[in-house]
Length: 420
Image (cartoon, rainbow, N blue to C red; front, side, top):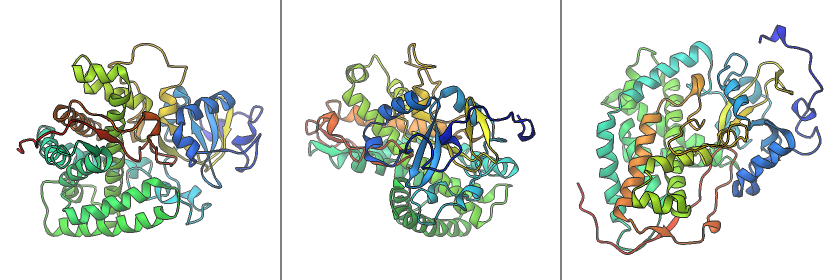
């Protein structure tokens, strides 16, 4: 449908065209503790009240539409002409100290562009990622996992977020990118501040992240290697330093927080759900099945794939305003009653990797790392269990991720494993 052929608006849903205070009540705050504690309850209530598209706030005073209908999401994700990823018209209306602005604003990278520029950036990114040797990646994860497990296995307790998942993902991604440890530590700190997106830490996080990555780019220009940053530099797309910076940011953004959260959310499922706890450790269900369950219910990027319609456009009975964020709830759409039912074991029809021109190009790498990380830990510590009741686990607030603050576990003290 072109803008010139748009029909006249039907009975307009008030929240869809007014400011954040318009409509039958305040927009739902996705930055709240309430949402972090029970997102699925919030999705159900939003669906009951509004249907497949719900009025939300991503931060105080930042209105958006949250897509929680599977079929509506598929339409939007496959229609970049009407739902472009370029946020520049929107971001001019948002103050610089808005906590979600650094996460959402335009950058010259694959995530925030459409059309020819998006294709140029995506080709360079795909080339960089496709150069990763998946066979060698198995050995890299095992090599990094065992020393980490050895740091806590004799103590009988650990926090799997800070002592296992984060350092494991961090080390592996740094190796794939050719990033030395000192620069990588600055990257990780800045990225964590950026993803929280609940106060002005996000602005400071972007500053720290950018400085670290400019140092990495300069290093790889002087000393190229067999790594993703070098492949980006050498690609025919001819990325300049600014484009390099923001495309590497997008790789780190996809590679640290979401990967860490996928591992942790999968371990949480295995440790708290009897369908998996007995079967995975007993061998009748695979770690892959547990990962797929998480990608359906608690994907690490629960809400993202943001687009910005250039003109008002109808989706079903709702008219979406121009230049206001439209965000896909992967978690909400995956659990849309319109598509629910049936056996999910082995079912990978979820949207967690997105679809369309902005679908994740690193799916094979991310899947392999997560599966290997979980398998290594369960093989080493098969009697692992939660150290606190499941309902006492704390989720980090923020509109985008599904992330535990910690995952404390206990287990029988074990001797160190043999290091490869």
